[in-house]
Every structure is written in structure tokens, then in C-alpha cells.
Image 1 (cartoon, one colour):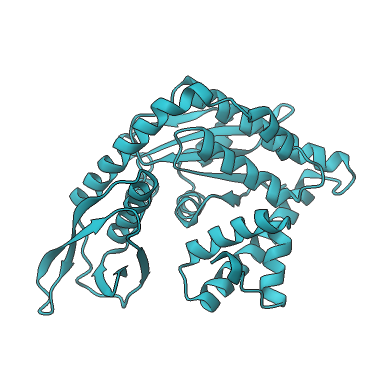
Image 2: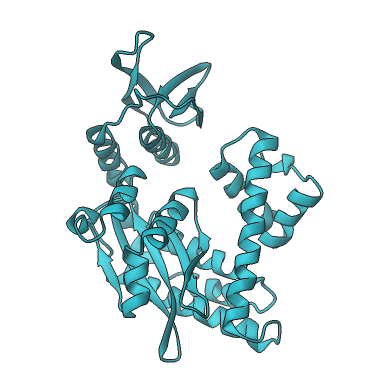
Length: 333
């Protein structure tokens, strides 16, 4: 359960519903427009009802954990409707995005391949560019260790991290199949694979995600992981999107090789374990910062990403400062 914090009001509703409303409020703010949504909730007597909320610019909406309740609203139709509304804006954005989609891409690749970047920052650059330059809503990277076990190394949000972890926990999904086969996996509508990936499909639906695309990360003739993107629409990815995702998957591999050529790490397995150690530090920092600032974990995650760029520090370094020195990043809140 979560509360939608709306001004001085709190509307208790289901996790997936709250996340969908929050995502839609961000899209409306980005497009300088307003809309009304009727959020499923329940009244003081526990009866199902709805509350109308006006969403748009300058209207603050946040979420916070609420006590678990057996009456938690689940309304797939409401989430599907919100997803359709979000898709309308995203399709419009993509129409104007494509002519300039490749502009600045060479400079972005140079940044990814900077050998002074920590491996965590290099891969974070990959997924950030992926969501900025394509129609993907979320992105993540998984890499395999020496035993072939996949690990989540980078993700754009808690939502994408949940989608990736769900795959690794059940050994099903686009990034798993991509790594296993070494082939591109393109599934614009996850419902078409419900029988093949039942748990992953349910996780995607719960997180308001509809489509997925996974591109193998290769080194020589082997596949060492995958770049997995997620979309809140079922329109798939056009040829320009696919070309960029493929180049970014190659850039992720090149970034690992570039760092190894600098003598910082000797083997790919050492790099994966080093990145995993950094990821653990990042996860700890997210929790610590969320507690100190009384914010959601995902908000803390985005604050760390923004803070690292703003201060010129790496994610690992900033996360370590949050844990060991109690840094709060107040100037960025």
C-alpha cells in the first residue's frame, strides 16, 4: 500500500496505482498541461470509492509507504488507462525526437569510453543515454560472472531494477533469454509472452511496463550480458531506436575493455565483481539517504545520480560519502 501525498491530503491506494499516478503527474508537468484522474481508494468504512485529483505543473504529488491492508485496491483497467494517457504524450515526443536523435551521440559515446570513469558510472551513462535518445522508458544492464550467473549492474530506477531482479530470480524474461541465446529479444507487448514468462509478465504489469527489448552485450564471440530496455507503450521500437540500442550495447562492452586496457582491472570477472561491490554500496546509500531525507528510495536513487553529475564525483564515491560521512545532499533536494 502507498499514500499519494497531494497537498495536505493523503489518498491510500495500491502500489501499482500510486506509481502510475506519480508517473503520469511527471509527464503532465513535463508537457505543461493538466488532467484529472479518479484514483481508486476506499472510504472510512472500507468501501471502494474513487477520489478525483487534478494533476499538472506546480501541483506537487509524492508517494509514501502506507500500512499494508487486505483491502489494497488493484485496478488493472485504471492502470491501463493511465498508461494509454502517458503513451499519447510519449508518441508525440518521439515524433519530434527522431530528426535529432543522433545529434551529440558521438560526444556521448566518448563520455562512456572515458577510461577515468568508474565502471558503475560508465554503465550508468549507457542506460541514461538509452532512455534519453530512444522511446524506452527504463533501461538496465545485467552482466554475467565467471559461473554464468547474471547480476544487475545498472538500472535507471527502482522500477527497472525490480523488472531485472524479477527475471534473475525466476530465470525467465527478456534479459535472461538474450544472454542465454546471444540474440536480440524484441517483445513490444509483454502479454504475448504471459505463458512463457508468467512471473516476469506479472511484474511488468504491476510496474506499469508493457514492452521490453534486450540487446546482447558481446565480447569477441561470447555474450557477457545484456542491455535491457522497458517501455510503457506497446508500439515497439523503430529502426532508429534499435540502431542506437545496439550501439549502446557495444559501447558498454567497449567501456569494460577500455578500463581493463588502462590496467585498472585484469579480468572481466574482476570487473563484474567490482561493479557488484559498487552496486551494493549504492543500494546502501539509497536506503540511508531515503531515511535521512524522509523520501522514497527511488527519489534517493535519482538524487544520487544527479548529485554525482553535479559535483563531478562518481556514484561509488558519492554513495560512500553518504554512508560513511552522513552526507545528505541537501543542496540538491
